[in-house]
Length: 205
Ligand code: TYD
Image (tube, rainbow, N blue to C red; front, side, top):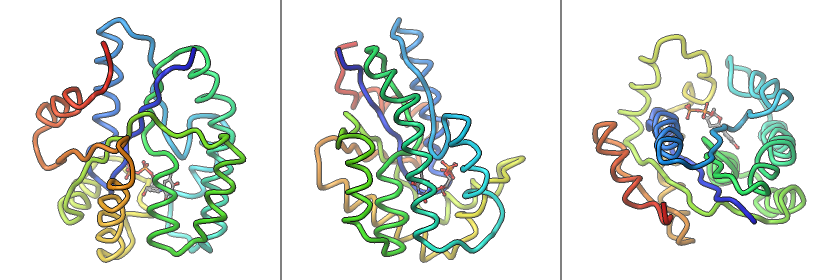
C-alpha cells in the first residue's frame, strides 16, 4: 500500500516550514503515522549538500546548483521518502521538485528537459499527491526571513527582489498545470493559514 505524499512550496519567508510542522502534529494528533522532512536535506548526505548550497553567498553555476539539489533529492528519495511511502506513511516534505522547477528552471533558465529526465530516473516520475503553495508578497516574505533569529541559510534570500518576484510568478503559473496544487494565501495569521490547509486536504482523516 502506498502512503500519501504532501509537499510545501513557496518563496522565502512564506511560512511554509511552520505550516509543514503544524500539519505534521495535526496528523499525529489525529492518530496517523506521518514523517516530516525537508529539501535540500532529510538524510545525512543531503544535509551536507544543503550546507554547501543554501549557506553563505558563494557564486555557483546554475548547473552546479541544480545537480546538487538533484543529488540531495536522489539520496533523500531512495533512503527516506520512498521507503516511508512504501510503508504506507504520510510524508510531509518542506520543498521538493517544484522548487527546482521554479528556482533553477523558470528563474535561472536551467534546461527543463534535462531536469525532468533526471527526476524521472530518480523517482520513476512519481509526484506528490498534494502540493501546498504558500503565496506571499516577496517584500513581506523577505522581511520575515531576514528578521528570523539565527537564520544562516540566506544564500537565496540575498538575491535581488526581481528574482523573488519571478519565484512568486513561477509558482502561480505552475499551479495551473495540475490539480495537485493548492494555492494558500500566506499573508494571514498562522492559525488561519493552517485552517485553510486542513480544509483543502483531500484525505479521509
Ligand atoms: P529552505 O531552507 O526551505 O528556504 P526557506 O526556509 O527560505 O523556504 O530552502 C533553501 C533555499 O533553497 C530556498 O531559497 C530555495 C532553494 N532551493 C532551490 O533553489 N532549489 C531546490 O530544488 C530546493 C529544494 C531549494
